[in-house]
Length: 329
Ligand code: LMR
Image (cartoon, rainbow, N blue to C red; front, side, top):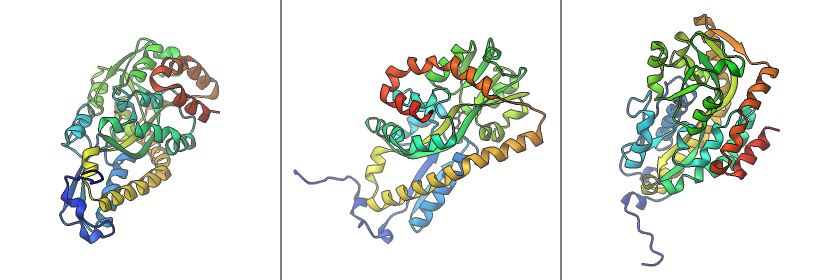
């Protein structure tokens, strides 16, 4: 049987250039945890529409937002098990299975949005996506939410000393935990959709997230202070179960690739304005006190948090850290 490529999916027999040849309806379940009116929610919706159009309604992507199917903790497992075919977790949540991803959580990793796009479109993005191959996951690309800000209930967080003794909800990520350790804070790893309740009850004092998530999950209604710090990156790896991917006809793979490419371009064009618009809405709809770090303050945050780069070099790899530092100059 040398040279014979056995494929357990009969669907592969469909000719590559015949879209009409998709014989049976294919349903792809896509689970994510954020609201629909967000960079990820809208990109996922757009992806589903494009796949529907390009396949002449033969491939249906069912999108489950708001963690309605699986929470952050569950979704990776569900992908491995084949209970869901696609997810797009925050890159922060991948560091525990593939340590290189921790590089993207380093404080101030990307100084600007242009640097984010450059990094993800280039070697950094390719290195990270291919690191998932050995986990039976195929990485299809990245969507970006934006840069993270700090919110807090009772205290304005301006100098790094303001973090001391307070506790913050974090995504489950070793770097984020160490970041708050360094600031003298406690951090509580928690699912995204449990955060609002925890902020409201006062179980945690604050959290870090993008404007888009702070707005769509209404954190700004239970927090009195927000610092525009842009201190961390929040973006998503678009993932598909690799066995499932290999079982798809070649022409369906092409449709998925093309649709992802279009949504990546669309997302890069719109995520900044979405966050900007929602910042305006937050200002209009609440009395939250907003402080924007000035250059001097920001320099101090960068300096305080810089030891994390050395700490995570062994796990993330010197090459990747160098690539990221290169974007900062
Ligand atoms: C979070 O848990 O704060 C984010 O990962 C949610 C998301 O997917 O944007």
